[in-house]
Amino acid sequence: MPTTFNVRLIATAIVAVLVFGTGWTVRGVLAERDMADYQLRLQAQAADQRDLKTRVEAAQAQTTKESSQRVDQKEADRQVEVRYVDREVVKYREVYRDRACPLPDQWVHLVNCSFGVGNDCAMSGATAAGR
Image 1 (cartoon, helix red, strand yellow):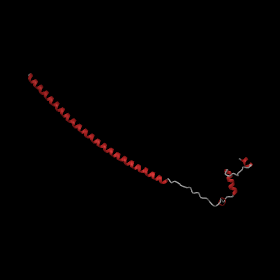
Image 2 (cartoon, one colour):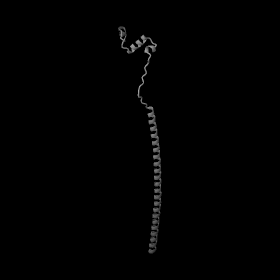
Image 3 (cartoon, helix red, strand yellow):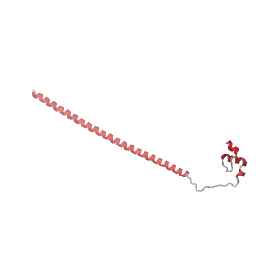
Image 4 (cartoon, rainbow, N blue to C red):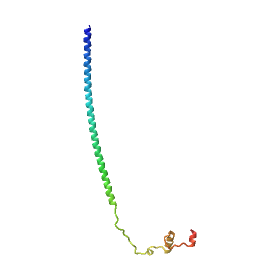
């Protein structure tokens, strides 16, 4: 019966090799399928990133354009506000101050002396002692 045992052993070995080979082949097919799915996902993510980058750049360009328009408008408004004066107009009154001022001369003289405006305001001895 040693031959029956050898045949059975050889048949079992062949079946084991076939099962192993089939499993190996199925594993390879599944791995290739998973790799193809992974590559498709990467391509989709890359396309999404390109789309996002395009949208962000467009938004930044729009923001820059609006900002530069605001700055240009403010500069134009500022240019309108700046006005240079070429000459100075001086108006003289023909009416003397004494006629225009209803206050008595003594009162004006006292006020001028109190502020030290007048040159003829000499302090008397009594006033100097009071200070």
